[in-house]
Length: 147
Image (cartoon, rainbow, N blue to C red; front, side, top):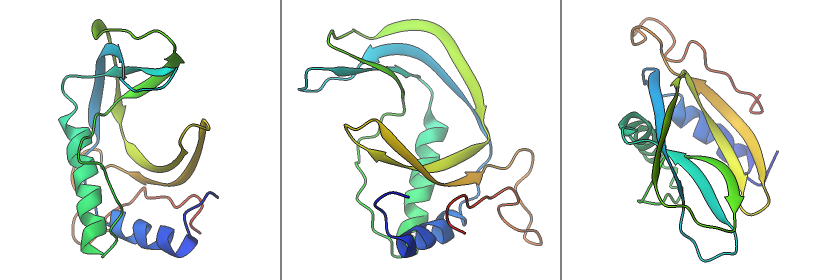
């Protein structure tokens, strides 16, 4: 299940379950290499208008802070999709837009440098209208490994 203690995962799930956020479109239309000081660099897709991704991240971080969960998070955040690792760097170039509708978000534990990713939980974004006060906040919420 990874390296995060189960009691902490339960607290994170309770905090993130408070987040109400609509489904949104993601458009990636630029390709580039991230700069680092290693032999291989990530070749990624980014998008010019990924404000919703950033706002959802901020809402999740704030929900955890409200529940006294202080997880270190970088202030600089660049939403992207890693395609490959390469030895040659690529400048930023425009590419044919690649898009989809984000209908859920997940908590993934990334084992940096090991190409290992563990899905810890996922939450559904609402499709049409925000949940009313009389209904559960997260009707499609699933707890994959938390039950």
